[in-house]
Length: 296
Image (cartoon, rainbow, N blue to C red):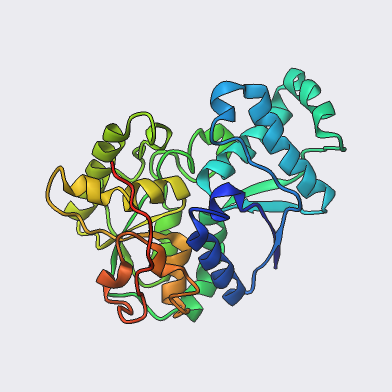
């Protein structure tokens, strides 16, 4: 199975462990990734908040490049990238006026035929393969955190139930871990406020993690670099405002990799601020790597 791959900015920088673990896991599952050549930012940082036309054009360009490369489907592991690419596809199909404005900007033919997929949908389609290859993580209770962008807006992303999604839980169950039932799995982590209202982000993150812990979670699984960043590196700031949480935040690919018994270093497990060694999966192998701290 060959699949187009749009890593986005985060997976080549601050969320390198997401890229590492994803490539390692998909190789083990028999999926070959073909990176979109000459891809550029999807516009999820500032473009979509300042210039709608530019934001759509940035992602449409990436879809046009994938189309030019002969890719029928592109998987974007970052939830924000997935949302922006899906939005561009939707806009170019339903807003003829804007599409007419944007097409000349792309400097190449564009038929809007590339399907956009997120990483949760990809892994859900591989649950039988995962279940056949895994060593059960039967001791682990996991909170599945969707956040805002995987399931909303439903008419654009067309993925799972926007109020009661179950896809991530299906993947967790395939690893032998137990997905817990909790209240804040669709709440916003405050990613858009990370720099402008950091105290609010810390408060929001603490509420999310406190709810996960209250419902018995030993770890939280995410599919978004910004969600991971806010919930992992800001736990020190959250602790200053209350009791310690000490909840490891894992990318979904890392959890699957753990069940497949892949090398912890290949999964980037040492790159977290809250060490997964607390899960006692392979504490001797998950040595924390030096990371810069962020005060919040």
